[in-house]
Amino acid sequence: GDDDDGLEDLGVPLDSVVKVWCVHSTPNFSLPWQRRRQYRSNGSGFCIDKKRRVILTNAHCIEWHTQVKVQRRGSDTKYLAKVVSVGWECDCAVLTVEDDEFWKDIDVVQLSKKVPHLEEPVLCVGFPVGGDTISVTSGVVSRVEVLSYAATCADLLGIQIDAAINAGNSGGP
Image 1 (cartoon, rainbow, N blue to C red):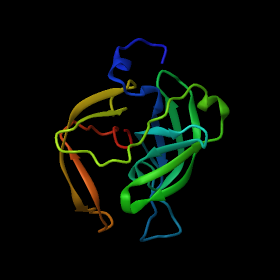
Image 2: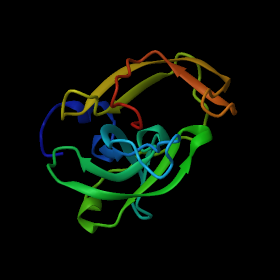
Image 3: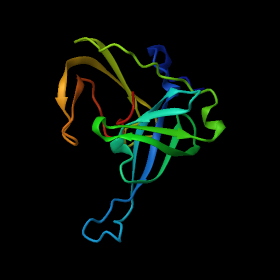
């Protein structure tokens, strides 16, 4: 971003991280022809492929979505996003934005193909609830093992960290 908040020195591509705004409408399973009252939430996401216009976030951030928008750091503009794919078993969702302006000068998070080691330093970046500015917390990898994901009963590789994560940080790198 243009604002000098001193965070770029961390080596984190902060301009890859976006705030995800979602309007949800959960089904009424007792009266399936009706929907429950809409509610709003926000989370985080990050660009992993600028050329293919790919944003990664958590599936629970967009669950029962009726509308998803994304907002870049330092911008007031919210862009309509499309949910491309959802992996409920691993709590991941892929979003895209059709507006060319959104992709101008966006940074990309380079994903590692290696499993992190114990005590490896980590940074968590996102937009926690209660503010409009980006938040960065740090910690270390404290555990790496196959875990059962509660929502799906899938056994997947889990990486536990000790960095503080707040509501709204979900979906961020």
